[in-house]
Image (cartoon, rainbow, N blue to C red):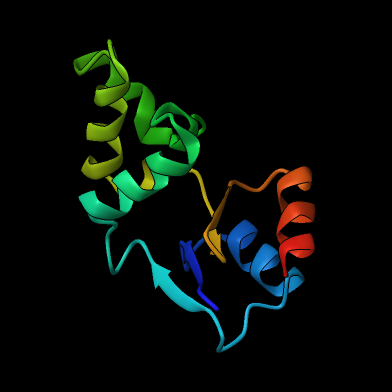
Length: 116
């Protein structure tokens, strides 16, 4: 069984969701602040979502400033943002048995619980 969670250790929402779905030692845990996501991981996420934009945390404070200097014209531009800074990844991201769950929406959390 492959279980992995990508999260931010300083994010209260990530902590709450991880507790809610009972993340334990069966999960590989990657704190994206101390262990940034790789290009291969971003491409793996894309294989599930078919969109880099779907992986972007549009509420990230830094995003507005970065978009002024680097306007997004294509989906590949979103990929560059994801690799540029950990805060741009919508989180948490759960990888469970080959399925990917991105974000903190109630529906997503319910889907994670169902997958477990």
